[in-house]
Amino acid sequence: MFVAGATGAIGRPLVHALVAAGHEVTGMTRSEQRAEALSAAGARPVVCDVFDADGVRAAMAAAVPEMVVHELTSLPRRIDPRDKGTYTSTNRVRREGTRILIDAARAAGARRFVCQSIAFAYEPEGDMVKDEKAPLMLAAPAPFGEGVRAVRDMERMVLEADDLEGVVLRYGFFYGPGTAFARDGSMAADVRRRRMPIVGAGAGTFSFIHVEDAADATVAALGSGAPGVYNIVDDEPARLRDWVPAYAEAIGAKRPWRVPAWLARIVAGRAAAAMATRVRGASNAKAKRELRWTPRHPSWREGFRDSLG
Image 1: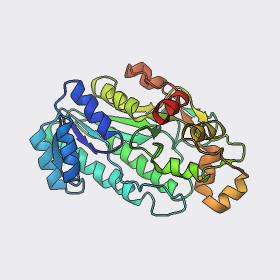
Image 2: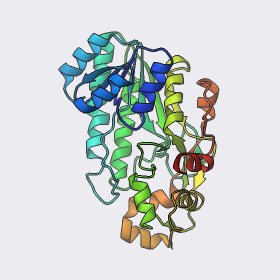
Image 3: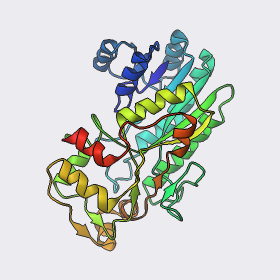
């Protein structure tokens, strides 16, 4: 197995899960310091930048992987929906980096290519919970709209790659160690400062996934399931008005404010207001059926308490 992004929020538990399952794992990271952690976890580290096409190709050729997992992003520690450049680096990873990884995987003779995507980019129309056939919100307000278009481009590259079984995993919002929702994460800091209000009726529907469950699903996708797209989320899509107070309680924060949607648009921007009021959740039925995977944390309710208490 070759894991690109092996030291990120999901990369760390994924490497541990793969090693525990008996796989030979090569983990790619940009950091010499983080390479030591990969060695300690039982993986073979490779220090390389994804935009170094020759370096990636050489690393992949040396690893001779049967399967490649792409878990790379380049997001800032705190997402600012009003910053036009918030997603610029990750958009480049998803477009240029994905192409480089696919080319290297094909040249190395890999059979399957599994790629991280997102389950919170569905068009905000109709049902509040979407399956994998639902359209994406390609016309969303900036900067999220450009991010969704980059996701669309990345997914097409993976699914249409010649000589590779392309699998796209649309993960829900990560929580657990090393994520924005951890006790020391940016979301926790915002909620403690009461900067994550319930907007309007709080009807926006979010789907969550614990990073360890996401890692388990990724291991399952390496060994089963047809090529295609899978939502990797828990069993209980959550309305904003339900999960924000529960999260605040779990981290010992004050209850969130309530603000009208028009005020949220002025203060936080159109993209943030739309996310709070119109975002759709995702169904995990296909992943449970075809990958034979079940989350150990079936609901964010217990998951928040267990991981944040």
